Length: 188
Image 1 (cartoon, helix red, strand yellow):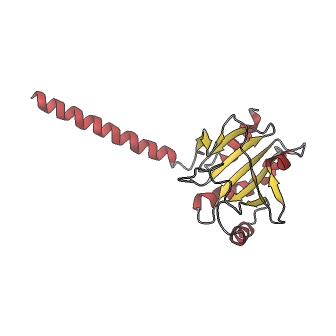
Image 2 (cartoon, rainbow, N blue to C red):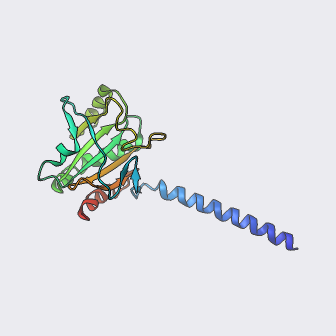
Image 3 (tube, rainbow, N blue to C red):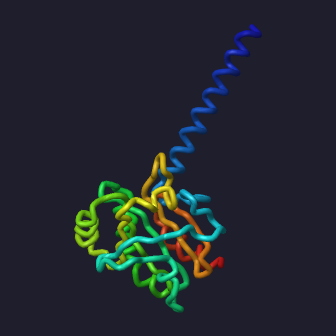
């Protein structure tokens, strides 16, 4: 009789563990809530933003310093994407739909293609009708700076405040994505 109670306890613990794992998976994939993170690559919330540099469509170098030089800019949103990433496409469309709100809040949006040919990234951004600065990383130098080296997960949005510090890092976007971007800079 005592061994039956022991087995029952083991199965209860295993069952509880499965329920917790399932609940965690539901929370992470809930489309209603944006995944908030403490860091991505070397970008750590509250710390100075790591070096950022890439090329725009006009073959001009884009840096955080240049992006933040405009006195009207309260912050910069660096949104990393790839053409094959379905969640990235949803997030990019949200940024486009709320472009006016972001501009009024003083937030400059920069979309950064992750490791694809410039022509492919440009065609994708044009097809979506995105009005934002497109930056490409021709030499792959930002990998490991803003994304993990071993397993880069997309989408990834890094919000940099006027002070050059990381205000927020977001993974997959939910319905509250734009609100969370604006709120991250309101706290500064």
